[in-house]
Image (cartoon, rainbow, N blue to C red; front, top):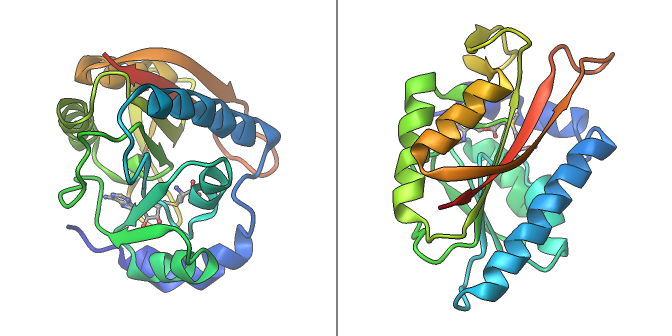
Amino acid sequence: MAPQPGYDALADLYHRTFPEPFQTALERRAVDAFADLAIAARDAGPTTAVSIVDVGCGTGGVSAHLGARGLSVRGVDPSRAMLAIARAQHPDLTWSNGDADLTDVDLSDVAGVIARFSLIHLPPDRVRSTLADWAERLPAGAVLLVATQSSDAPGVHEFDHAVARAWRWHADALADAVTTAGFDELWRTVSRPDDDHRFPEVHLTAVRR
Ligand SMILES: C[S@@+](CC[C@H](N)C(=O)[O-])C[C@H]1O[C@@H](n2cnc3c(N)ncnc32)[C@H](O)[C@@H]1O
């Protein structure tokens, strides 16, 4: 697992800067639409201890939002400092130190995986292989939400993220990675840049075929 020294150093500042899980109503609604699908997938499958894995959960606000929707959530993050804040804020949820490989997580009966603004920190080829690995390990019908900074230009572009190396994805490039990995796209939202966001942002939801 690659350490995250940038997020470790900036965890407190990150939490003070982003005390709320969502910066826009659209983000919240996209996550809630994903939660609706995950609840349906969970209810259609066997009862599981963990229904959602939040990959790169950070300080845990989105995990907690999903927990409040009635989903059992396991947050996973490579930054121990970000996780410490998540654990202190939301002791009722399950947290573990790890990265997008999810090596220690059994995905065989998980209803959904959410990865918001965390896969941006993986090189594009590793995003593709990681998505393919998740698809192999998830049950058919499991739902996936991936959110990244985006681009109007086709393809994937490295950008000057304040904390760690990062890549932003045109929505079609992200959809191609997700579908090639073994998921069918259900919907996507793409927001325009504004005073608080330098780039468009994509939330894309898909289902394991
Ligand atoms: C911008 S924060 C997003 C936090 C949260 N997902 C949210 O939506 O608010 C990015 C998070 O991704 C995590 N991260 C960085 N590299 C990662 C990797 N290889 N695998 C999983 N998470 C990673 C960081 O430690 C950080 O907590």
